[in-house]
Length: 491
Image (cartoon, rainbow, N blue to C red; front, side, top):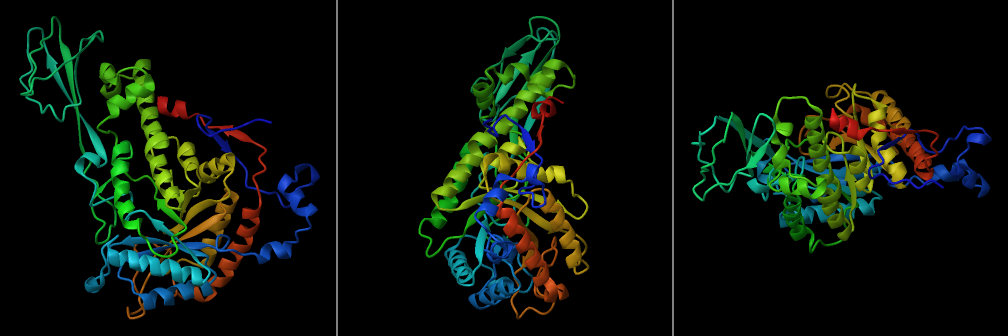
């Protein structure tokens, strides 16, 4: 038997799951097992669990929630055939500022606890974005831990010249001079931030490397959640960030959410405080001695190799350090993890595989099944049951989308190996808010105030039937396609 691991294997598994219509030659092992134990289609489809039913993103605007409306909304969702909600606290609705609740405050945690208890009473489950808005970040993220951009400054020096620039010794991470033929001299700074080095002959180029926060803040954050986005290339930043949640959940009462979630990679980051040390540890040589290859304009083979090593290091830091820190913390607190790896500069397969549930995403026109199969392939190779999808973001403008629009999208996802649909989505809205209630800007409007709601049970029943079968199956793959990640990094 061939043993496969996802790390450094870079395989896309092009398969859906069990093949219900195959001839005997192509019938999967799982299908034979089902037949031999006389599991009828009727009994299989009767078990429409919380996981088999579709879920929905559930935006809490300003987290201005109350017990009466929470119960009322959850009851409506359950009656419509939903299986769970995924809470995302976002900015608040105008006119309701007095009811806003700060994210992770004692009152907010109390509302979360009540929601999970009510959901479980009604036969629903709850997931939670780790943060307010997206991506990871918030008020506890210091500038040192924020997603960062590298700052590369160059200076031309002729023989006998000295740098007149005065640097901050605390911020400069590398200072190195390079001759036209590639000779490197790493320079040191005095406590005052100056250097007395001068080129022995010819014209040399000096590189000064530092970093700065990108300035990117958490997107659509609500009260109590605003702040810098996190630097996923810096493990220490993740450790400090998790302390915020450790404090909040250390004495969490009652049942816990099923899982926690990390959204698609929308960080603006390319550097970290310890990137040079991490590079040398992982690649075996000093990046400081090859700065022209990383920051220069020449497209040489050496430059391509340096850039490849830099990109692999960035990927390794996420795959082997920061994301596992999050997963480990989540498991210690009895949470499953859902991760969207797309958009990241790392190896998507590795990052999808790191979570309990790999999650892809499909929009109105962006329906590349191959992209979605990165998530399902990682799950298949790692033997994980569920593949989720953020489903229906902006299919059309508000209140113009139809259930048929969503159904066709869901079918594309099923063909991509997805078996855990999460609609995007539903906005919590109190009954006292006039029609059409509170709305999130990037939504399918899968809510009780949309006229399509009267027929949504038909769509949800269809999704539940399909997902019951798909979740009971196992991948039966005929083809493995190699994904040349190092070629991508080399280009």
